[in-house]
Image (cartoon, rainbow, N blue to C red):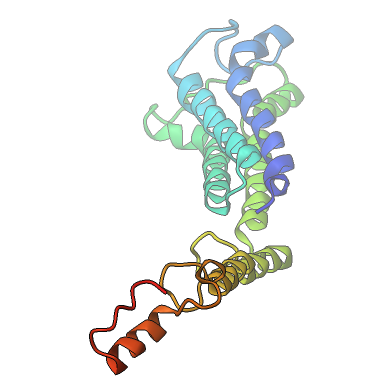
Length: 216
């Protein structure tokens, strides 16, 4: 599989994942706050609902960018998709263990600012990561015509799977047959005229018992 197939999606996913992991800690510096308004303040909500899924998505993006293997690229897309899905559903699911209140805390500012903060922290970015991961998953898991052509060419070059191209094997066999047709371990050109092959010496020994055929 060409490495470029998942590179663009992987790069975008990595950037978005890094943003999600960092925005709770640097957002207050840009007047984008959900929960505590102090920058670089670690809370359980920021850890489980922003940092963890952001890092997971970023790791999946890196796997997509660097992998030239279909299996590992597919795994990277699935990892990134898991991070994106958790960014979307995590704040709501956190109400189950936080007394019915989202563990993220409340967004600051007016209605427009609150919507922007929720989209940038969780829902919008998580949806984008999930969509990109789904596109990448489809691209890297499908077998394209170019993949079939490369696989067919490789099979034609090495049908027995021993790692040696077939044309080299044929050349080696032909060269070996030309050098030692009778299989006695002595090249034919060294046997020379007037020297019998091993098969001829054996037949001569059968016809003439006791005759020395070791040297001619």
